Amino acid sequence: MPSFAIGADDFLLDGRPFRVLSGALHYFRVHPDLWADRIHKARLLGLNTIETYVAWNAHEAVEGRFDLGGGLDLRRFLELVAAEGMYAIVRPGPYICAEWDNGGLPAWLFRDSKVGVRRFEPRFLAAVERYFARILPIVAELQIDRGGPVILVQVENEYGAYGSDKLYLQALTDLTRAGDITVPLTTIDQPTDRMLEGGSLPGLHLTASFGSRATDRLETLRQHQSTGPLMCAEFWDGWFDNWGAHHHTTSAADAARELDDLLAAGASVNLYMFHGGTNFGFTNGANDKGTYEPIVTSYDYDAPLDEAGHPTEKYWAFREVIARYAPVPGVESAGAASEPSPAGDAASNPAGAASEPSPAGDAASNPAGADAGVPAFEVPLGASVPLSQVVGLLGEFSRHPDLPTMDDAGQYSGFALYRVQLPQRSPDVAGARSVLTFAEVRDRAQVFVDGSPGGVLSRDQHDTSISIPVGARLEVLVEDQGRVNYGDRIGEPKGLIGPATLDGEPLGEWDIAPLDLGRIEEVAAVLRQGDDMDARLIAGPSFALAEFDGSEGTDLFFDTRHWGKGVVWINGFNLGRYWSRGPQHTLVVPGPLVRDGRNEVMVLELTAIAKPSMRFVRGLDLGHTES
Image (cartoon, rainbow, N blue to C red; front, side, top):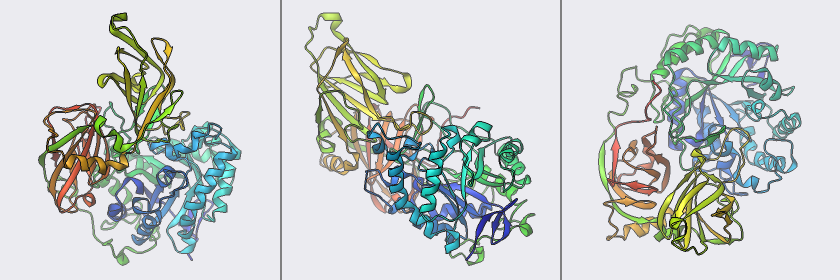
């Protein structure tokens, strides 16, 4: 069987020096029917390896229910990597960051406040052990020494930026080895003395993460690891976006120059990202370093392959650089003679591995014309219904003596509706207004008094108080906009954080209804029968329905620029969030979700839509850039 090891200066494949040329591709951010296409385009770039995280909270969204099917079929993903003649790097966490909800850690895990977060704590490690028992057997069976593609497995993720608990790192290492993982184990940290020291452990191979000053960063890494191959295991070739900011881009020429410097130094690399994909549903993460910043639905990352899977200018620039150091299909490579061929020669790949990408400028690859064949059209929203009329289809209220969090109610993403009876107030007191105050709002709260809108409290604005009219019943619709994925606020609960007061007096006896939007079909059934549910104007929060005729397998791009804030489903699949504040103004509809003939779109609009129609455009609109 083949072997993979760490030598004095190089990675060793079957005893021969081997440079890892990898690209990050997260299976949980790409429709499974498109995995093979994205992997194939990675090999045509000149890469020989695919790297992926494993998102624990995607596989075990509900404690004890582990999902390994459909878009979470890790085994199938790794087998497709092997079928393309490529190797694989797996990063199972348990923490992954990745701008992913809660950094991949299940929110249910922290309902017990005594559970440790990323530290040597028995409850946390016991849960990790159960998680590893489900995921590591898949990885173990597909290791290179058993005929599979997996050559490296990472322990934790950039731990030196968070802590320095060596007992924790050793416990994770022991659990990983106990899971029958025999390939070399790695760590990754930003190349600073503090982070490399805090996140490392004897016996684990150190790698670095950076996107610039490659020569200097590799030298810092070498100072902390005198032998073994140098590797940038996250070469940041772009960046992520958050709502209300600009779309981040990096110069293709500058990124290619940095990649050239890195490869010229003899280092291995993992492009982060090769293809970012999409934060479908409610999977996006957030950052909070004093101000809460939720991540947008798109995870385009300004990567070589854009969110829709098309090669960009950066793809061609990187391909030219890689060809100087390694074999690239269809390109005379200066480095061809010095690199061994990856497992499964291109000529034997049944998926068309011998084919070449379209040249720059071709409509199939040029970002300006990539979507020239995509249909552009507009359809009306046919019917709408206020959330208040269908809330009983999505959840049931439970009563709590004190203000509960969403987590207390077993709701770990999406929305929850709160209700409380207000104390009687004389309408002539204080101008018929009262002041409602919470300790904290996580993350956006729409306030209603006796059914009428009373305003919005936003975490990103540090809002905690609002003036409301005198009334009998207070309702608050709270949206979890994404759990923090980096730093000390990982694991915090969502919803309204008490105490809650009205004019300084405590409010008690709260009702809360978690909204199960997995039951969206029940709302759709109401809308299909609603001939009198006019959608000429939509005042949120309301659901609306639209239909269009489609062609199976055709990628579509839904234009959200003329809408407010909300969520979109197509044929029952949650595409994710939209928001007029941008920067993102399109939602990608992957072709495998589109049916021949009738297709159905559902919308939950939280604010308002003045022109109730759905407009599809020819390509991505990820918003304004900094320049």
